Image (cartoon, helix red, strand yellow):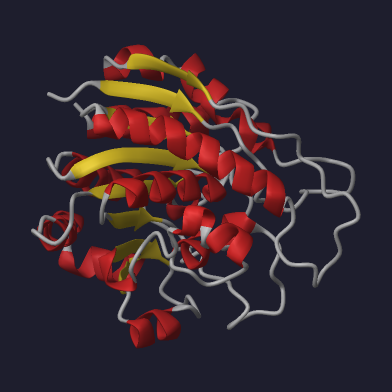
Length: 296
């Protein structure tokens, strides 16, 4: 069994303020999961914290591109340094976010090493970019586009390594059945399965097919990205954009277990859960149980 290392990446730089004068609470995700003893229950080593820059929109206005872009770029490089070290050492990092922009740290780290795939468990594609939207701004809803080279160069081509992911090396799982990004995904041949398709085929069959498609000689491995909003809001309301029609815990548990159980899986990040929206802690307890159960 590979050594597991829990690393905190408590960045909220990629989300819009939930209300004027406030900041997104997802930076508390790591602390909340630690309160549920995730490190001990995973039998993991302590990886510490990668402290993010301060959340500050300054004088940013719609049309100015990605807000906090310089801070996200700095943080991406710093987080990539840490993740790269663990992967090169043969360890399996479990990165506790944070918003989805922390995925850039993982994809940059792996791009430094070789060619890796991504299995993303997410309620949306996070594929907003200048070619399909005039509302660019929140990197937490744009990280997949940025990772594939779509967007401003200060984030898409760090260290001259962009794109960090190839379209054909991505597997999206858990998009809602009515997601409008599906047409673009199909045109780009980015593999995806909606909640309805996962249920029709069965999560185990879907996950095994994903693993088989990523355990190929051309890839050095793959990363797993878990956005808590892939779950239905009836069980996971504590996210910034809860959308009906999500996965239920048993379905996600099956997908996660098979994905992280692959020898080609080199790490996992967990994002978007906001403890501020979970006053009794039940959603955080569920998310912790799902992550721990995947490695059991």
